Length: 544
Image (cartoon, one colour):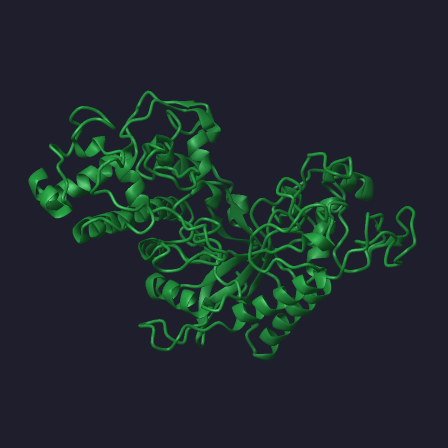
């Protein structure tokens, strides 16, 4: 399979038989093997220095030498894409005026989506595109009535949400967008989109259980109708309206006409669609904070009338549509041929989002970036559910799992996540099995309109290095920047029992070893699985 080359055509997606693929600007089929967060941090860890300091000691810098070398490493392990949260120095569009070998930009080019966090940046009003920051609907909830996990979610009806993304797209670099290596736009960090993750427990539990997201229609119903500030972002508001709650009021008023009709449907006793006495104490719909008996469960909506559940589900579809459509339209207005990849994860913990979110996403996104596939016994049912409501669109899945006991994070227990292993070898086996599942996964034939489809067009591995902040072995490389290949990430370069300083060199001649312990081999299984799939593409004649 060839890499993208020059030309004005943008990346697209296309079905070959029953299987989806990316297609590069020069017409080649492309299945994406991606890695998140090819970057570094400045936090001092158990080893007494930062990853950045070790990188500089190893490569001489953290940019001109380091960046291209990480791309070489990734390609040697069978990866062909760098993903969100990665340094500019590994991205194909990075330039360096007057730097030897950089006349055409980063010399070791690899495909990459154009990532900008269109979820949290409006909340912070980065670049000052808005008159004031956007609002977070979770900032206004009463925790006495919502006992679930809280994280931000940008109000998609707030004027700043639209203003911010449209302003960004109009100011964005045409050079980057027109690069044949830029796959499309990834425009939202899922950590700031709470509610777009795993759907209701009535459909699927997360893997492991306990991480299902709240129903965003329910959250809008109970959130405060005005906000004056948000301490989390050091934001103050002169326009205090929470536009999502106003949108819910308008939606219900249009549907029912009178408050009496709404009360009959919901079993409620509101006196007005607006406010009548103030949030948390008044009797209007806008005063709802979750205290009333007719407001059911934030996950399942249990305890609500059938009509109330229908209304909140229908509003959830509108809410998600507003989110995706606003970003989609901003992208296509400036770059009509570019792929809109949506947020970087929709769904979470091996679990699809609610069907209304999938239905909305299917209207606007070109590829669903999700977290689906964990070798759970019901992975097929989760895939079928996703595709039934998404429609005939391709998907690519976030995945990542640790083996803390056999890593630079050996002092810390594995987190409660799926496929956590005790050794790097077991971790590698899980990667191989999961990649094989992605490649072969086929929607059950009885699912309407999409039965028989093979939707996966990529794997999205989290992440490049071990995460000190999370105390988790997510990485392909250790905290000392040694690959987990059974040779580099060892005390002395593959010589168990020999102590001392680094005694080995990696395939490019850079020093390795000097770990606290000898760690096992994850990379060989990763490389073999990636290369086997790539070779199968060529054998099947899917590279053109």
